[in-house]
Image (cartoon, rainbow, N blue to C red; front, side, top):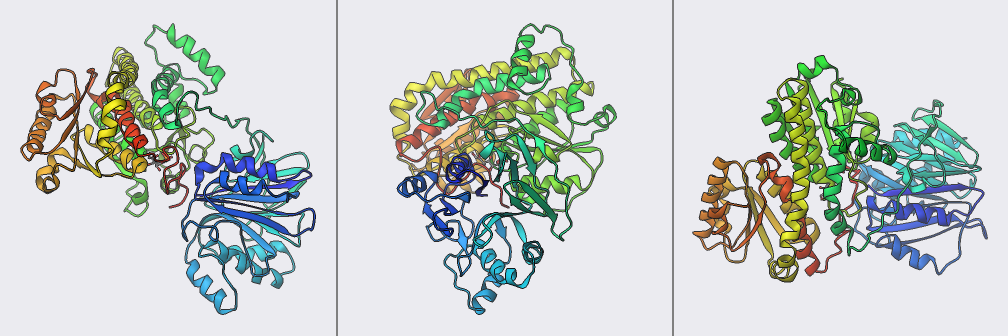
Length: 637
Ligand code: F6R
């Protein structure tokens, strides 16, 4: 992961780099660093700090060094502990080459050992530092920087993008990209570089997405772009007008809480958008919403299929749907499996992205693959997408970021209208994914003639109701949670989460949410599996949280599982629906919410579950929006 920012131009670089770093902290916040060629003495000046961009800025603000070429880095640690030494930038022995890097150099241990045997001294335990030392040995052996770079990249393996500054060449910024993103912003006598163009989106709209396996030599007024074997590449400049929106927390203590409350709007907005499919700009959205509110017809436009590059013949001959995702997005996909199999009656497989690439792949032209990802940048999912693309099978990116790599590389795009999600733990992205997939399953069923336009319309109404219930459920239980329950449950060291059928993947999401923000250990099981072993864990120190369903048969089974817990004096927390008295009366603590259409039961419980977890965590005084060891965009495998 990690975020890279660089600048070369007529102006001073420091402010540009820091602004970019702050915007890229979602890529990691273990440590941060800044380096430039100081205009006062024409040598490197740098500083790096463990912790995020703020601690670095505090220290650097006490110094004055600055220059017209510089770069910064915000780190998510892969190789080497989180400390100052392992923070970027790194240098070669002579301190004539500085590097910031995103990605992983595979097999770097051998290169490092070889370099140490040749007399190089290392200051960190990172894979990155190897590149600086290696380039330090390669550069003098070549007549041009370009030729030295050809040799450098031939010795590196893994997925990486990095930027180099050579102290002896202060007019050039060197960029290398292999499977990790790097973009160039072209300004007026200045160039910007970053892992994500949002870092400099208010400075220029002229963007060059570096192609994979390319390197560039950047001057303030020109770009040389080469393939890894040194062939000059054509430079394609795209005009991208998206702006970084500095999202305000409003009255909320944390972004996570704000985003929990954003969910009703995110879902409603997304469904409205699809209902009258159009462009996803804000201006277009207000027109769409206005027309949606007056929309009484049950005619559905075909524009969705053009957007997804799917023909009618393909839709009718579909024999399998696949969803590929990681983390919370994988949980959303697991919930959606019930939608596609129940509503469209199409066999649906859910793949964990990190495993997908390494399993046998059976290419089936009658299948589609939906890549589910909030960021659209998750390396595991992106690599899976590239593999599927190589078989020329239809791929759809369902993401929250229209400019992401997945959207550029998939054959179709299902946009979510959740708005930027800042808090690292996914909340509104998760619920909007679930809502979008429910809408899409119905739309597919309509196209294949499995449901009527009236049923489609009802499905949309059900989504609006689910969004209402999601928020209402929080309001119903807000006081109890904030005044009593959060304090009580923050005292436990471990929890077990149980779900059955469609509530099982939801229980997995709940366990993940608790683990990642509170650091309380949580384990999730299908409720029916309890008796096959985990039941031995039941004691009075381990609350068991059960999520109910609205399917009557499954609900009865859940009651039996709750009895199994109570028979062993387990402490039972139940999320149930109105009227489910048999389950509610077994609970030590029950959250009861209004009933809804059965397939949307998880969506209705989402806000309340997140709110409960949020307040337990708040009691423990954890850094809720930036939990330890995590990053918002996971761009390493
Ligand atoms: C958990 C969380 C992660 C992400 C996962 C995939 O709250 O946010 O588990 O869901 O890293 O990320 P995306 O959805 O961006 O592909």
